[in-house]
Image (tube, rainbow, N blue to C red; front, side, top):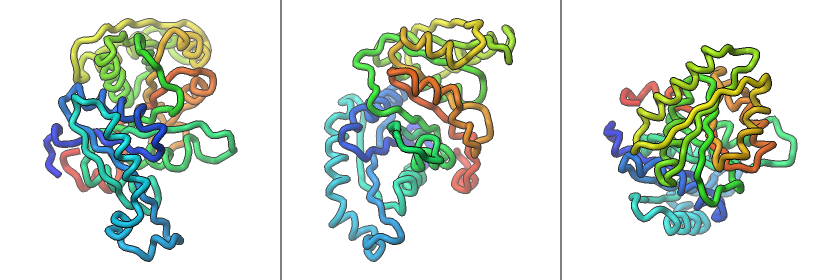
Length: 294
């Protein structure tokens, strides 16, 4: 793959036909503002202990990828008409391995995946597949909560607290706002661990990120809350918005807190569409070390 940004797709990974429209719509918003394209992939899993391990990838794709192809067909049908869309099944030792392979093969600019809340106890924060993608995917990553989808979007909440992930969060917030003629509300909390000047700096940097993000001019409003509890303040204002876009927290990229306790709290207590954005340039993977243009 070349290093021309326009040739690098927005990759969207789909695995459930009931979820494809939600994810492809978000990928379409990201692609549209740059006149880019979408690449949709569905992974056929080939674990080491599976009978599939006896077959070549080519044989698996020819004879056993029927379900993945049906999912891709539906995803292609519901994709936006004004965005170039391609699709293909891909074989991987696991879902995460397959998606990471697709990211490397396409040199994707961004990856959009879905996440669904689970009732069972687990050591994973968002599920083993999504957790691994958060740690390893060497591109901007957007994790959208499945099943909580806004029918109309008039207002997007962008809570900010600094850090490198504000840039991709602002990009997707602006892309969604551009499609819906919606307003992005930048929100910071002047909690006890911050100070008014720091909160104003968070706001200013986010406003600059929105201005620099691809796409047409959008309406932006900003506010600072003086509450002591960040999550509580966001939950309270979230009811007035249709979509909430978080940047991942600023802790180390391999740390569990990358997802952040505040986004997790808001997700559990809000019924709004939620997207978690994680910047690709914080991931120091072997793939990135081999790719000078990333």
